[in-house]
Each structure stands twice: as structure tokens, then as C-alpha cells.
Image 1 (cartoon, rainbow, N blue to C red):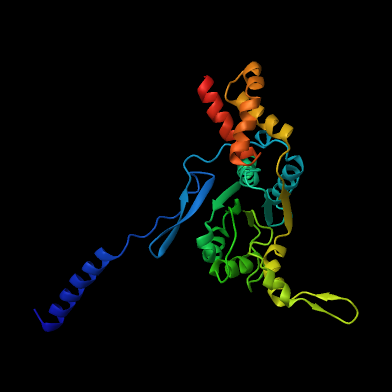
Image 2 (spheres, rainbow, N blue to C red; image 1 turned 180 degrees about the vertical axis):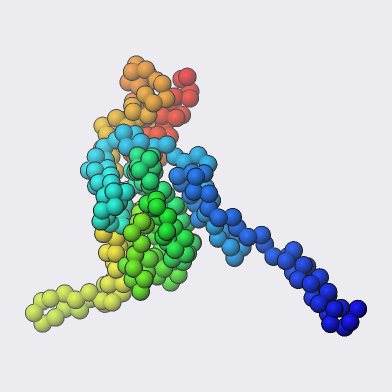
Length: 287
């Protein structure tokens, strides 16, 4: 065996060892496995993971947010029909149905090709990669960012701005971003921000650059949908709806009212989430 043959043999053995240390390649997404996916990371590799059991919420399950349902349903219908539609920011009181409404959209429009991809705030920088991954697919994709807010200096803030409306690349026709947040402007607002306001001689008020930066991200969402805390009667209606869905009779539903109000008082909120949690507890106890 020549010296060259010995060198090549040793090099081949070295390559085999190196390959055994490298992580296995992530599989291509199985688009037939589900209608909902999560963007996951394993070390330096990222991939789409199919959600085996997507949420089964329906529009009819979401009570007393009729205006919000109408806006989201219409925008999503335009999207799946290939018509112009907007990225959406859903903001407002906690537990009032923001993320549930997006999940209900998937349930309603999945048969028309809608798919949902959940992206964690920590992975916002990967949005361009996700868009490129699905760009040639025939389905329509909503990138779902839940409970979105940023602190000063977070990298994901800039990445989301670019993905919405700031890249040299054109936006993909089969991708929209739907985000929920308890904060309208997604960044914390401080009293010191007002120091940047300047009064002109004619009385005009000129906002400082800090404030302009903080509101610029929200403005890149074409549709804003606001949610508000429920009145007492609305809250009790939602409780009754969920109790019926769990098989409770009308007598039990009427008897639950006092406990339902006490449950909400303990949690400091009359929201759809609190109503659903109470209904599960009450229905389980009286079953």
C-alpha cells in the first residue's frame, strides 16, 4: 500500500468519525400530518414540528366578541381566497379570546388550505427562514406569535419589523402574521420617553425619536383588533355556554351563578378564560 493510499484510508476513517458526531439532519415537514405546526430548535438546527392534536375551538365557542370575530374572520377569508389581506395585531385584556380566535380561524378555514405555524418570541429572528420554507407551498400560512411583547434591545423586535414590512425581499403572498399582546405598542413605555417631545412656536407637538421607534412596530400591522374585559352578565353567559358544552342541565347552570362570580372575584378577572376554567371545575364536581 502506497503512502497515498494510507493517507486516503486514514482520511476516510476520520470523516466517518466526524459524521457520527454531527447531529442528524432534521426531516422535511410532513404537510399531511397536521394543519398546525410549531417552529422548534434543537441546538443550531430548526424545523417545523406537526401538532398532533390541534385546538378544536369554533367561532361559536367565543361569546361576546362578535365585532372582533367579524374582523378576523373577514380578513382570514380574504387571505385563503387569494385576495389582499392584512397582518393582524390583537391586543387587550388578558383571557378575552385573542389567541382562541386565531385557533378558531384554523378550525374554520383548514379545509380551504389554511395552516397555522406557532412561533415563539425567542425565535422571531427565524421568521425569514420560515417564510422561505413555505413560500412555494400551495397552502396559506398564518404565523402565530402569542403573548408578544419586547423589552429594550431584544433582537426579535427588529426581526419582526423586517418580516412585516421592511425587507428588500417582497412579502410572500401565502403568509400572514397574526400576533396577540396585552400591550398595544409591544414595547414598555416610560415617563422618560416624554422628554423627547418638543413644542414648536406655533403650538405643534413633535414626538421624539424614542416614541416614534416604539410605535413603529405596531403600525406595521395592517389590522388592529382590541379586546376588553367582560361585563358581569356577559361573563355569566360564557360560563353557561361552557357548562352546556360539558353536559350540564339548565337547573345546574342557574345554580352555578353565585359560585361563578366568586370564582371570578378570587382571580380578579371576568374573562372568557376564567369562565372556561370555572365551567370545567363545576361540571367536574357535579357530574
